[in-house]
Amino acid sequence: MIKNLLLTGPSGGGKTSIIRKLTEVFKEFNPTGFYTVEVVEDGVKAGFLVFNLQGDSRILASPTLKSRYAVGKFRIDMKSFDSLLNEVFSPEKKTGLYFIDGIDKLVCQSRKFSKLIIELLAADKPVIASIPEKGIGIITEIKKREDVKLIEVTPENRDLRLKEITLALRDLLLE
Image (spheres, rainbow, N blue to C red):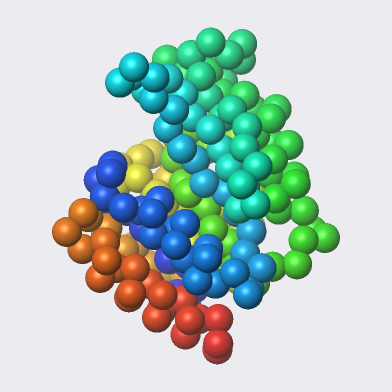
């Protein structure tokens, strides 16, 4: 049975916007998760922040961090990210729905996240996440799962996709 909806498509296509809107539409289900935001300084990508759904943030990646984990020029604050995962996905947290923006090269560097995302996808609650169009390793594995539906989001179809995903998610939650 398909219960996990993964948004894919080009950068800037609207995946994050859709996920953020869905967290508001379905707030009565006490959703949990996180989203990432690019930090741009003087027109140049300077890093990434990670936010929980309550709006608390921390640095996820920056070229100036001291870390052995990296993607390109960005060093990843793995200790801080894993700490956020412990807070956001603690077993005591009662939720009916998970939002993850996104399943990408940065966060998949975390062994904790890689294990957690597989557990969440296999659990009984829906996962709504963004995932890159291209990827290797765990990204490819996740996209091949039988309980996952890939939904392409583009600037041209994002409003229609928001409506479709809202209806599909409502049906999943009311089953």
